[in-house]
Image (cartoon, rainbow, N blue to C red; front, top):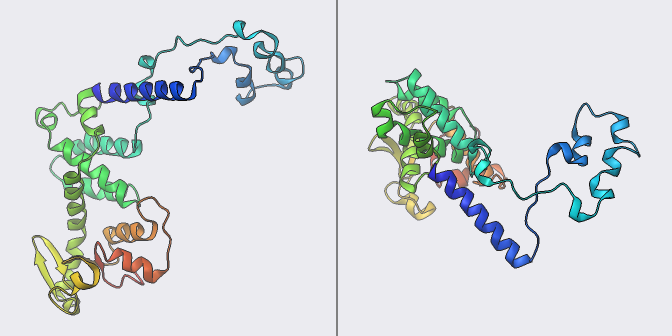
Length: 273
């Protein structure tokens, strides 16, 4: 699997650079059965196994010269199972894989149901977008069309694992917004959005500000904002993003959070929603 092989190669190269810069020894491996420190981490360890005269206290690392320690460098990264290799956003990859390989077979003609499941997977807008972007890539691929989009196909899994592109993330965000539009349409038909001067922008219902054309651009730097009703899961995702930020570190007052959310969407009654 080229993706994971490249990741392993990158890690090995980085370790080599660190070793060269710091002039330190390489990484050594100790079998668990020969490692006295492992004893204290076992739930079934007894006092006798950890006492003063035990291997835990007098093992080879304490009683033997360094040249006789039971250590080795023979372990190879090629032996590391694929599912043990840490990659960025592993949860997003796992969720997208689950959606692509499982949900799509359950709902072969109902992608809307898949979208609802993905929206409920996390309260993080960033994570949901990444999952959805990978899902879209999977169902749009030749693997889906040929019937080989299965979990034990390494090429299909590698396709899902690759980082989403900017275009893929934008497409995912638009689909997320579309999921919240039916409630907005109901409010529009009931005359509840008149003060926002709503208009159509493709399949989205947007506002350009209560003061009309270009007022949003002058105030917030955006030409229009999709309108969302506060009870929707989509509105909750965007508000949580405004509350926490992309890295989960931004926590502000209600007024500040509302202002941050209105760079992306206009949530009706957002301050109390």
